[in-house]
Length: 145
Image (tube, rainbow, N blue to C red; front, side, top):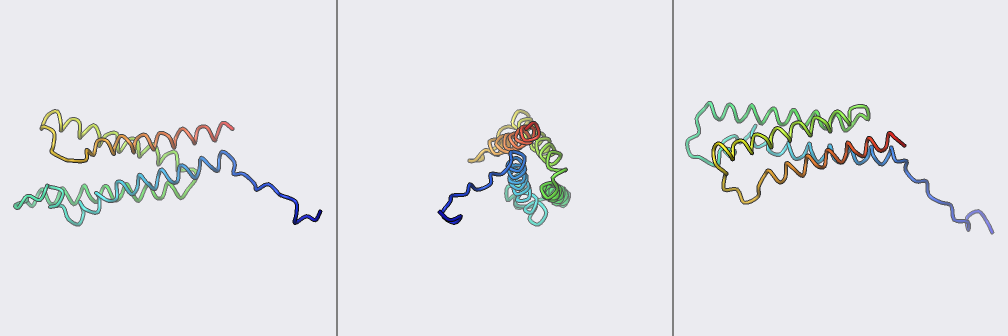
């Protein structure tokens, strides 16, 4: 039997490598989720206001500022994904950002009334928080091994 006939097992990635890839995927999804509304807020702030015909200049200014802030957060999440030492920090930041976004929405629902949105953004934010928490859990598990 020659060496070509022998089956050689493929090397398996370590738990740490798998956790690192999972964290990169989670950070990329978080960055995409916040970049979309950031782009809309920065370049089309009137669309965020529900298409109201007359949007005050101050509201447009605030909408662009919030959009710029969201894009900045997305960039920071991408930077965190590209550096192994920053991945946990990025995921923690993602949890904090989306948790406080969720708190703001719930507070608005209670104080201002629930909007008539077909797809509740709250569900997406809960899913993104869960995704980031799973990434953090995988990172912790990968470090223990």
